[in-house]
Image 1: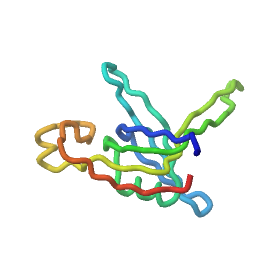
Image 2 (image 1 turned 60 degrees about the horizontal axis):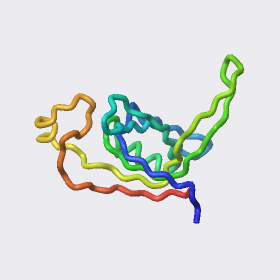
Image 3 (image 1 turned 90 degrees about the horizontal axis):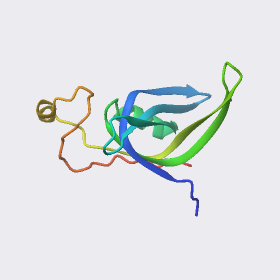
Image 4 (image 1 turned 180 degrees about the vertical axis):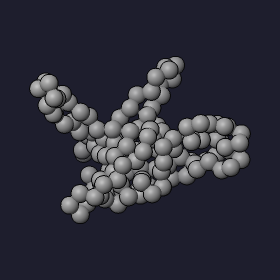
Length: 132
C-alpha cells in the first residue's frame, strides 16, 4: 500500500494556468481552504498533468469548489539572496467538482468570488483518474 495519498477540499484561488511542455500539458492552481473559526485561508499549490490538467482547466474556474487527491511533493530551491527554500505541492491524480451554480443561485447568494456559497444541491462528481 502506498501511503503518500492526500485529499483536500477547497476553492480554486485565481486563474488555472495550463502550459504545454514538450508534448505534455501541465496545469497549476492554488487551492484555498478555510478552517472553521479562522478568518484567513490556507493555500496549497496543486499541479496536474495531461488529461487531468486539461479537464480541470476546461471545467473549473476561480471560486469553484473542488475536491482533489494526489501525492504531496517537496521541491528545494535557491532564492535570489542565495538562501535555501522548500516548496510543497500536490500532484493531482483524482478530482471532482462541486455543483455548478445556476442563475437562481447567483441571485440568492450574491457572492463576489464567483463561488456557490449557500447552494444546497447534491454533489455532482466529475472524476478523472491520473497516473500517479
